[in-house]
Length: 180
Ligand SMILES: [Zn+2]
Image 1 (cartoon, protein in one colour):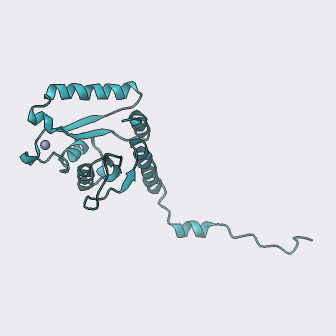
Image 2: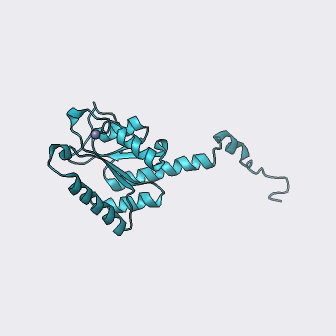
Image 3: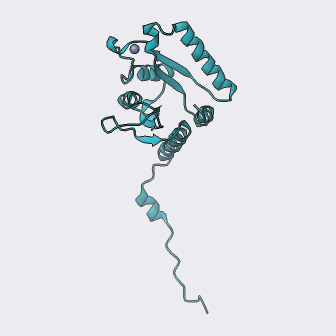
């Protein structure tokens, strides 16, 4: 996807841990071996690092839908697993995805969700609506950065609005000697 490395760099610089959660039923179907998949993922991690970006982990569900496992999206199993393994706070995390099952898995895991729409992918009225919609991974990264910045600002300075209004200096009134 064009702009992917830029997006990863931006997210890494903002302090995010970057995890891919992917359904790969082709493994169970015998279309791709686990070894080949591992090689592909190894190449992705390397490409990210070479581009000055970062990927922390790739989690794979190899099962078929009929196997009804707990790790195939929209099940949140792998997202929760990643959070446990990497000590990630899901409430301060984003699920960025282009399919309804990504968004549902993220929502069920307690993440804020960003749906990436394209000519091939969009969300329908029956899907769980993403919290945010982006037209590219780059835009999704921007949204995640600005929303999380807002979260941390609120944590550092939880000042109610009324207080800041009260603190405001009164408008200076004209004094008797003014204009004289
Ligand atoms: Zn699975």
